[in-house]
Length: 470
Image (cartoon, rainbow, N blue to C red):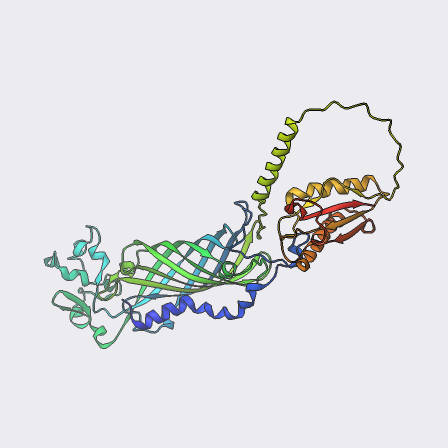
């Protein structure tokens, strides 16, 4: 395994963005912005996890981010050299799609040149133990700079670093084996490494990852599309390809990828992403298989600019009250059955009609009241047609006014709460008449009675707003 210092550096790189958490705790309880709220729900909040959300189209909630930063390879000898001198540039492009306000998937591309250290003392090299062409160096034995053909089948070739010949350290230069490359039994080694010297390994690579990600504050708190700061952990798998370079052969591996993104909202569509991630791949990734470790690691810290495509926000799904619907259907069926079983009685001729002059001040009701779900002042989609009918009536009869009266059923809560609830319901309907349908505010009055008056015998029907014509 790589050293303790490398572990600390690697884990620190993954989780250092946690320092932003304290500055964002107040975001968990922030209310929705008023201009994003439906009629009758000022400052209403929704728990993201417990709320059912409408499904957006496939074209919505896409994000592409482009940026770059720093990266570091953590291999067998990489803790022995300068950390800062081994840091290289890491380009990054990510494409992500959210499937709910909480979770999404992304495709992440990165790569570049990784720098590591090698003391040339221990370890075996993948090139000589990969396939048949180069097995135990049979493709290069006897060539200038390599051991002679008499070493055919010699396992010591596994310890020959393929980059030595690229660097000019070979056996073709008289005396070079004595001065630079040594051999101890079945092991070749680089002599300066015995005195603490190191040479730099160069790994040119490309990786593509698919990650599952979730927004932490949305998961544990309320939905807020204008939250300035979000923390997004992620994890997934990927393909890692180290290209042929400096004598090493091309190699492709599958690895694990995880990290965290600190997101800073700049506008509705723009954001700044500070990402800290790490990858674990087989220790053969850098071309060398060490004696003490089974994995190589890559750490990255990047900064990117993200742009959102399509629809960016989510809408609450307002499910119908199935229990109420079933109860109403049963009552309708019972009434139909009762009517069907009734016989028309024989009635005497009616008396002559008596003309009754009714005063114009009689109270009149529009036939379609607006019903609400329990403890809600949100106008359901099914009820808007009733408000539309009321607006049409008012437009056709400009001489009349309307009193919008709200009620609450007694089983919802205590009287004081029900009074406030009926007030919100009446205000929501009157606001819809004025703002959506353009009814003159002078013609619309509001009233609310809480649960003091129950206009219907069925308790659930008293979650209602009634139109009274004046």
